[in-house]
Amino acid sequence: MSEPNKDTNLVDITDCLEAVGVFKFWKNSLFLILLAGLIILQLSFWLFNSGYIKASGESTKQATVLAAQSGTDLTAVTSVNDVNSDAQIIKEATAIVADANNAVAGDQEVQKKDKRILPLKISMSFSHLCALIKTVNFIIIPVAILYCLTLLFILKVSLVGRLGGISHISRAFFVSLIFVVLLMPWQKLAGSYFCGVLYSPDELLNSFNKLADGWLITKILYYCRFVLYWLLAFLLLLSSHIRSCKWASQILKRLGVI
Image (cartoon, rainbow, N blue to C red; front, side):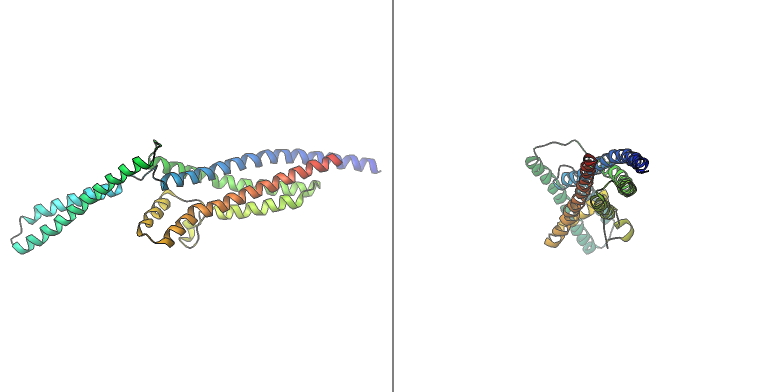
């Protein structure tokens, strides 16, 4: 009576191992996609933050608009009869034109400085960077959810087939849950109260522009948001994958005993 039960158990274990082999393939594939997505997001941040990729010349456009407006004011002033009012308006318009010229000169100086500092030439505009970030965000969210579900299915198969390594795969599953929670762009729902690792191009641009105030706390929060927060999610993903690899090795050791 014991031999049929033993054969049945071996068949069940074999079926479970075949299912685990399928889940293991998808687990590793999804992990590589998530890893590549996180690396692309971090490289995008540093390319923009270092000045290799710049937003379209907003300051230059603003300066041109100010100059045009000031020129319009100058033409309108000539039709005014009050001489004192004309002098005041002309003085203000001249100041606006001077500010506009200074802004344009400042942009040109920054561009010259960037050419000296940045030896590498990257033919990529900010619009291309925006498209890249949006594409990565679109792909990485469903892939992260599938990765978490794959670990859940592996956990269930391991429990049913009594394959072992339950502690490792359980920890890998719960770490992946935390990773998915941190990854989601909660700032789209909760505003500025809580944010996720994923960011939009507008958020990156607005956060970078806030650095102009010169406050140290602003710079600290800026790098914590885009670097340390990303590093935490990256380590969680690696921890989950390492736990799942330990689970696989423990199953192989048990099969060697069997």
